[in-house]
Length: 304
Image: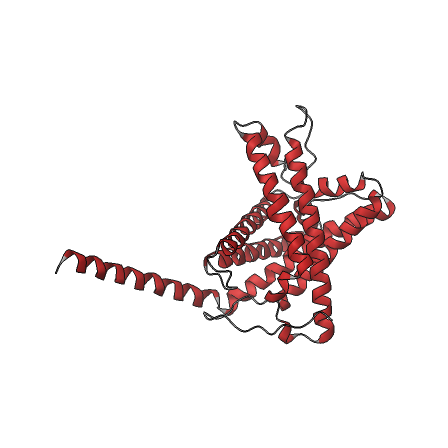
């Protein structure tokens, strides 16, 4: 047997094996337990936006309470009756949503494709999966911590700024938040690009109206908050030494509060986060998660 023939045979075998592995992975990802696990992740994701949104709205209305981070929202869950059980449920939900992010990157069930735009979107799903995995780890730390003793969390920018080239890394991450997570989300919400991933064919007229309104308002508001977070991260580099950075979700909300008409701005942002939280919870029912190998013709509906 000639060398070219051997090489061709080996390539064919490897290609067939890779195709078989991909088919098996797709079949596994379409399993009912995987989909249920991922859908539960949407519920938990909604919860960790709802809690900061409600607290920020209270802060805007009567200036009591305080803005809070997603990690802080998870810690609040742990302080409720049966807090350990609730934290375990939150951890499972975060793991489920992180898994859904990995599935979207690797198996592309929503057919984003291999074009430059599709690859950028799939990289965004990867960053989302990593972010929720970080929240999952934080939740596990709360679970294993002694009762009444929560692990101390420090703004990650403080540690990075002390390292060589740390300032550049903070700026790069901040720019990603501004354009990749912030502006892109605003455009996605404003144009309703998320709607193609919803199962409109299973909704009634009122449910479609609710999905569109909650999704658009919530996604635009979340994108605006993400943009502010990115701007604050970039601004951290210019802070005097020893001053604590005012970044993160709570920093973005408090920054809005300090502006002219700050309480109005904060109220709109809070209502947007609440809308996104409710939308995310309902996406456990609404989201089109696993589609076939061939692109499915999705019936679209005009905005009511």
